[in-house]
Image (tube, rainbow, N blue to C red; front, side):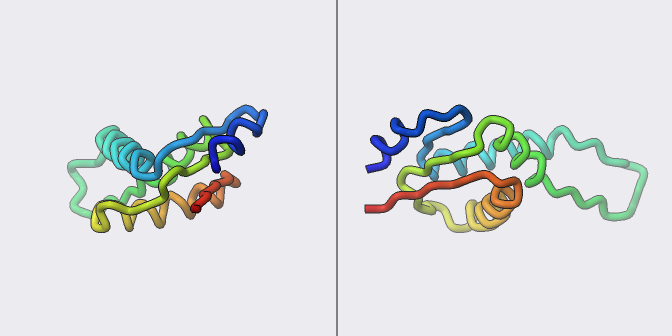
Length: 102
């Protein structure tokens, strides 16, 4: 059902992806962003950093419409936190997400 709809949308900036694959990419991107953060090693104070905004920004730079195939969560502990925050942040950035379930 989603294939014909996706092909009919003659717009730039759309992507179609399996949700599980999308979340694996999100987690990989989070890891890369965290590795690139420069922290003050001399400080004893907590240095919180939220990797979700830069990851969401990167996604929004490549697509404004994301069509999810097979929206399912296979690993609850790995995905729930990231899923909640990344999807909310994408909505805040006016990214459209489409899920068709038959």
